[in-house]
Length: 379
Image (cartoon, rainbow, N blue to C red; front, side, top):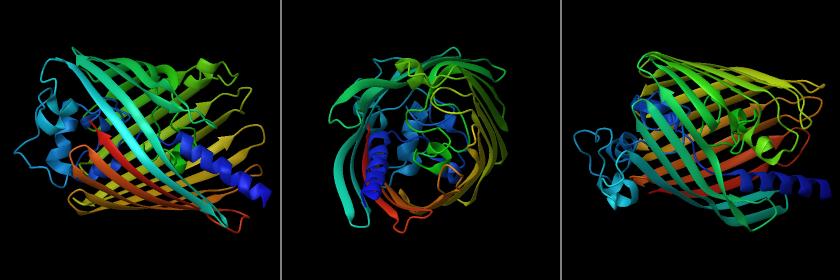
């Protein structure tokens, strides 16, 4: 009983203190947006929206927003979609800002044990500048400290990039390296289990090649940013590669690779995977990713599978089902998860999401059940 409760608390703590900012929403492939850079400054998805992305929230996504003929062009957004409802007008010039707030409620149970908490998962300020091929990006906000009610000011992402007219780009700074499907839920097995959780950014250099039909991203780094900042002995050479091919307006194929050298904290490991996304209609998107995760030091090989099928039942009302699995090794147990969720977008930049998780771990009789409700306000 004590071991089970301890495991529950460990799992619960990870979910509480590592939950946070949403990334891109690959479900919008059904709207024929197959690149994250259509709406975000980061080609890997997530973070600050461009003016076009802000306008699009009301144009195509929100339930009650009046629909204009066309989204506002780049750099021209006003009213509800603009930063702080347009309080600054055009006085910020080429600088774009955003505020992300995410109050949440979390309930967790396993057998006779249960607990609930109300959390402020996000309180972040994001800023970007883009001009003459250059982009500068920065984000800062609160980071909870595990085991404490306190939080500290922290920047998870900050980088500078340059893209030339031939589609060649280079990015330097702290960022999440590109791999597979960047689902908004960072606890999904293709993110957390492969080392792409909320605080798994790297300090590194990324080179990209963009064309009408493809996007190639290759990143190299001396290690995870957290290990470099804290000097915890976990720094090691990191490399990732991701190739996305747009087969059609609604069909995307992605291949990815990962290599991390050994450190004092973990053995050398790598991963390789493939993903396919397709949208059979304007209201349905299906993404599937499979990965092989190879661990050195006797860790063996495990396989990760994630599917997310999202359906827009009504404008701004989405339902999703996401079966996920990870095979076990000699050092870890296999897990199968059901994730059922609903996402409501009543107004531009207001999102209510509800998620239920049921994790079934090998050789454990009782499932770990989690309910997470979040209100995301993007100002």
